[in-house]
Amino acid sequence: MLSECRDAIQVVREELKPDQKQRDYILEGESGKVSNLQYLHSYLTYIKLSTAIKRNENMAKGLQRALLQQQPEDDSKRSPRPQDLIRLYDIILQNLVELLQLPGLEEDKAFQKEIGLKTLVFKAYRCFFIAQSYVLVKKWSEALVLYDRVLKYANEVNSDAGAFKNSLKDLPDVQELITQVRSEKCSLQAAAILDGSDAHQTETSSSQVKDNKPLVERFETFCLDPSLVTKQANLVHFPPGFQPIPCKPLFFDLALNHVAFPPLEDKLEQKTKSGLTGYIKGIFGFRS
Image 1 (spheres, helix red, strand yellow):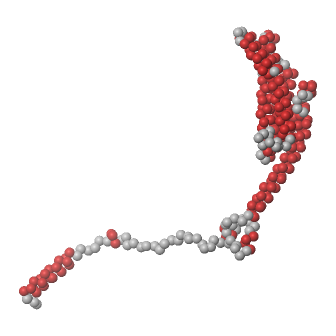
Image 2: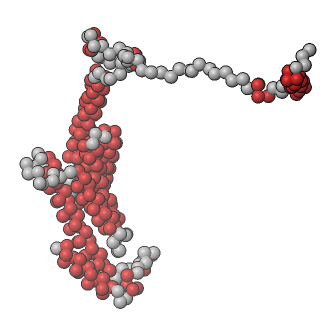
Image 3: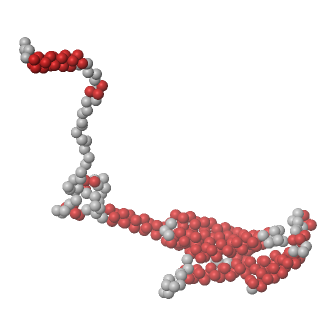
């Protein structure tokens, strides 16, 4: 059926191409008119979008039933997830936006109101399954906020439905969704409390696990270590490790390089002369 609608829309679109003015319409005053071909195009598009919405809605119902069932025994089959439903509701919401943009239906207030209510219904279900996906990853705060958003959308539908109840009776029941969300909120709060207590117990049990640090290095941390009352108590590091210490200082006479010694040439010459005269005298036998 969708394929036939697409073919019919393509034929009408080809008929609209030769006369461009037939696709232009004016909405001001009573002179605004839409051509018959444009009305036909809008009508066929409406049938196609409505059929696509019903198809995706039926697929969503099938996935919801599959989510309530247990996991399949065959590992080759992938079990449905809330993300699959979110994708279907995204497509439905996009189809509803396209319905609002159909030429010739801008002044139909009842149609606009009906599409707006249907949009709220599917937004509520989309928010619900987004919250379910957050619950699976234990993001409790985000899921709780989304549940509140679901109740907001559902209450808006109940308050504004009025004369549109007949057109909304084929859609998913928002009253049933409200009841389910309230129960899910209670379950979520309980799961959040249990998860917090489990995390506390895990932290406590981990504090009881003995680490490799000796007692001297963990005075500030409470840790149940039964080995402290045994003969192999880990109190300090033994033998102690080497630690760097300052070495013995070395002293250097730096001032000696700048000391100017007095001249000794005179003394050296006199000593040389007296030694040579005595040597000559010793040779010739002159002695004093």
